Length: 285
Ligand code: FAD
Image (cartoon, rainbow, N blue to C red; front, side, top):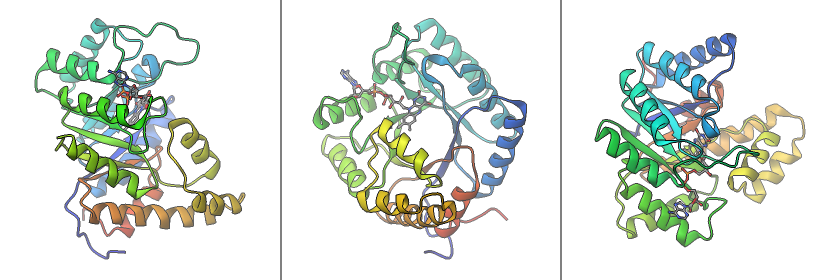
């Protein structure tokens, strides 16, 4: 691993909104611990169907007030044009300059899909309402979106979404480096030259990771799942292997020219800090 910073690519961190005052205090601490790595921005997820709207706004506000850049996620499924226009105005008034625009998934039991069907429509809407105010990130799936009819149409839909006015994309997490490289190549062949930043999931808990991965269609390679499984409740061994595997993946991605790294922090700083330290990413004095 590197001993000093060799990579110019920016990093960013993702949080989810907290539900309590105590949670918010802890998250502020995590945010400050991670700030030594000079992140480009902190993004904050948005619950399906607007279920965390208030929490997302509060968390984003506290990031901005602390002097950092926040990027709220915004999902359109189940929403109306008016409600999203109001939210975009709220973000503009808060000084927000970056948004992660998503379709989202309707919570089970909800039937009303609202006025948008896919994320490309949200990107078009944000551009129509707010011009070039926002830097718009969208989601990418190197291992194919779980609901996609097939890989080819999924890629076409992604290209349409980028061409609707997105500036860059963040990928679903993956552990197969080739899936990312092949996806980026396919996008280039389809005429896209916008940055596609790998999403990085630190490994700290195998059961939780396996559950997430099933849901979002991110493959845990057999060799890795078998090794992680074999540690059972031995959290320290899981973390140690996870740290090694994810640090190595990040190193290979940066060396291959990935335009940045976006960490799914799960509101924790320790493992992400350790990965960045392994990469030799410079800390602010
Ligand atoms: P889309 O780009 O709309 O794609 C969804 C599916 O529809 C794909 O299968 C695609 O192939 C297909 N499709 C797209 N356009 C068309 C079309 N015109 N015709 C037919 N089919 C089409 N979820 C949350 O709820 N909150 C979050 O904060 C959140 N943050 C995320 C951040 C990142 C970086 C990523 C990768 C995912 C995130 N998600 C979040 C999950 C995301 O909402 C789900 O994966 C959702 O199922 C798809 O959202 P999307 O924006 O990728 O959708």
